[in-house]
Length: 406
Image 1: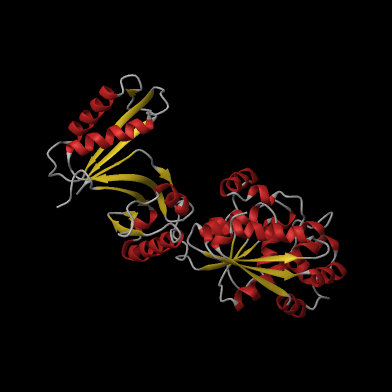
Image 2 (image 1 turned 90 degrees about the vertical axis):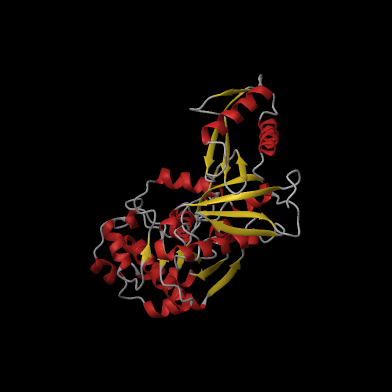
């Protein structure tokens, strides 16, 4: 029989959200989420993961006494697929244990000596437990007020601290609900090739598609010496940041210089941007096909620059033989910047190293091109030869999740 004075566990409660709506496929999504959590926790010692009632529980393994909840929460904070997590204290259904654990937790929360508002929220799943929900809440509220008369007062509307108690097969006590990144577990949405530049938009586009469960690879077009080695390193660093969310990622670096110079020589200046984008699509999808990746991802947003008008995007899409996902298409720049700050890519994206799209930009690009304009601009180009040459001059860097500390 368990000893009430020693039976105590610190664990992490992970709440799933959208996955719970997946019907008959729900099990597959949950298994992928568990796999992703286990991978993130692989360096955090021994642990056990279980699931029940739209929840996942992470606790210390049999060979160690406690789980470092702070380290574990940090390890899983960027995993897609759950809505929130809480560090939880679990102990037997014993009222004396309940009182002592509540007072211990309250002492930690009120340790600064200031006066704090609080409330009690009780969820009584175990209907066999003799005290009702209201009675438990009153008991614990009075207990805290009695022991902390100068540090605590009740505010049920906007409390600074909420003590959550769940009555199940044991007591579960916690005060924190830490928001997760929601979405779907990476690995459930297929694979996509992200066209990654050194700007603000494309890393955010990659993040958004990873949040829908997509595994990422990336392609970057480098035009040395017109773009510097610092510019290339900036893109590598952005790809490392993305691994925090997508997991391991292959970055394909295309030596685009000879192709870019051929375009510069043969194309009308006002169509240069459109033709360049069409060539990038051709090369990116050729690399994607070699990697058996069925879709491209772009950071384009409607109307943001001359190459992102409806007509320009239509001209670009005509050379695509696979879907091009543009998750930012309806977002304004402020919203994209806010998300870039949130995921940690913004400071790297604004480093002053230009990519080929800015170095070779036309002064007065055609904003509403027709397909015939693009085809006429390309008529003196060896499209197939340039595409194959660029693919052959592509180097691959394999970035692992552990490499993402900048």
